[in-house]
Amino acid sequence: AKVKRFAPIVGGQPSKVSVKTFKSRWGSCTAKGDLEFNWQIMMAPNRMVDYVVIHELCHLLRHDHSPEFWQEMLRVMPDYQKCREWLKLNAQQLVF
Image 1 (cartoon, rainbow, N blue to C red):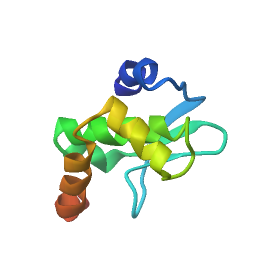
Image 2: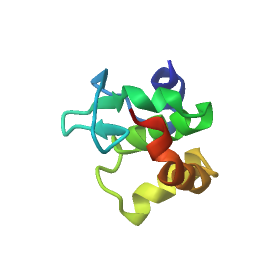
Image 3: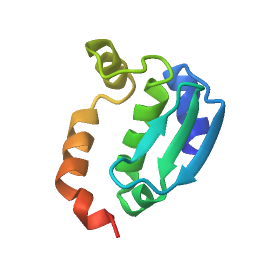
Protein backbone atom coordinates (compact mmCIF):
# COMPACT_ATOMS: atom_id res chain seq x y z
CA ALA A 1 0.00 0.00 0.00
CA LYS A 2 2.84 2.42 0.81
CA VAL A 3 4.54 1.73 -2.52
CA LYS A 4 1.30 2.55 -4.34
CA ARG A 5 0.89 5.69 -2.25
CA PHE A 6 4.41 7.08 -2.73
CA ALA A 7 5.26 5.88 -6.28
CA PRO A 8 3.37 8.72 -8.02
CA ILE A 9 4.98 11.28 -5.71
CA VAL A 10 8.49 9.94 -6.32
CA GLY A 11 7.90 9.43 -10.02
CA GLY A 12 8.90 5.80 -10.42
CA GLN A 13 6.94 2.59 -10.75
CA PRO A 14 8.47 -0.72 -9.62
CA SER A 15 8.22 -3.83 -11.75
CA LYS A 16 7.47 -5.99 -8.72
CA VAL A 17 7.27 -5.63 -4.93
CA SER A 18 8.18 -8.43 -2.54
CA VAL A 19 8.92 -8.99 1.12
CA LYS A 20 11.79 -11.17 2.29
CA THR A 21 14.42 -11.56 4.99
CA PHE A 22 17.65 -9.60 4.74
CA LYS A 23 20.47 -9.83 7.26
CA SER A 24 21.78 -6.29 6.97
CA ARG A 25 19.40 -4.10 4.97
CA TRP A 26 15.86 -2.82 5.10
CA GLY A 27 15.18 -2.90 1.39
CA SER A 28 16.62 -3.29 -2.06
CA CYS A 29 15.96 -2.09 -5.59
CA THR A 30 17.16 -4.51 -8.24
CA ALA A 31 18.52 -3.54 -11.64
CA LYS A 32 15.20 -4.79 -13.10
CA GLY A 33 13.27 -2.29 -10.98
CA ASP A 34 11.96 -4.80 -8.45
CA LEU A 35 11.60 -3.54 -4.88
CA GLU A 36 12.31 -5.94 -2.03
CA PHE A 37 11.64 -5.11 1.60
CA ASN A 38 12.84 -6.74 4.79
CA TRP A 39 9.75 -7.86 6.71
CA GLN A 40 11.36 -6.69 9.97
CA ILE A 41 10.97 -3.02 9.02
CA MET A 42 7.31 -3.46 9.92
CA MET A 43 8.43 -3.49 13.56
CA ALA A 44 9.59 0.13 13.22
CA PRO A 45 7.42 3.22 13.65
CA ASN A 46 5.26 4.03 10.64
CA ARG A 47 7.38 7.00 9.52
CA MET A 48 10.48 4.77 9.33
CA VAL A 49 8.61 2.38 7.05
CA ASP A 50 7.73 5.40 4.89
CA TYR A 51 11.44 6.29 4.76
CA VAL A 52 12.47 2.83 3.57
CA VAL A 53 9.73 2.71 0.92
CA ILE A 54 10.58 6.18 -0.38
CA HIS A 55 14.31 5.37 -0.30
CA GLU A 56 13.82 2.30 -2.49
CA LEU A 57 11.44 4.14 -4.83
CA CYS A 58 14.05 6.87 -5.28
CA HIS A 59 16.47 4.17 -6.41
CA LEU A 60 14.21 3.65 -9.42
CA LEU A 61 15.30 7.15 -10.48
CA ARG A 62 18.90 7.05 -9.24
CA HIS A 63 20.43 3.63 -8.61
CA ASP A 64 23.14 5.02 -6.34
CA HIS A 65 23.60 7.21 -3.27
CA SER A 66 24.82 10.25 -5.17
CA PRO A 67 23.97 13.82 -4.16
CA GLU A 68 21.20 13.69 -6.78
CA PHE A 69 19.69 10.65 -5.07
CA TRP A 70 19.64 12.44 -1.71
CA GLN A 71 18.08 15.50 -3.39
CA GLU A 72 15.23 13.27 -4.53
CA MET A 73 14.84 11.98 -0.97
CA LEU A 74 14.78 15.55 0.33
CA ARG A 75 12.18 16.55 -2.25
CA VAL A 76 9.80 13.76 -1.27
CA MET A 77 10.63 13.48 2.43
CA PRO A 78 12.18 16.63 3.91
CA ASP A 79 12.78 14.90 7.28
CA TYR A 80 14.50 11.85 5.79
CA GLN A 81 17.74 12.51 7.70
CA LYS A 82 15.96 12.14 11.05
CA CYS A 83 14.45 8.84 9.91
CA ARG A 84 17.78 7.60 8.61
CA GLU A 85 19.45 8.42 11.90
CA TRP A 86 16.65 6.81 13.91
CA LEU A 87 17.07 3.57 11.97
CA LYS A 88 20.83 3.59 12.51
CA LEU A 89 20.40 4.07 16.24
CA ASN A 90 17.52 1.64 16.73
CA ALA A 91 18.08 -1.10 14.13
CA GLN A 92 19.21 -3.68 16.68
CA GLN A 93 15.94 -3.36 18.60
CA LEU A 94 13.95 -4.24 15.48
CA VAL A 95 15.93 -7.29 14.30
CA PHE A 96 15.24 -10.77 15.67
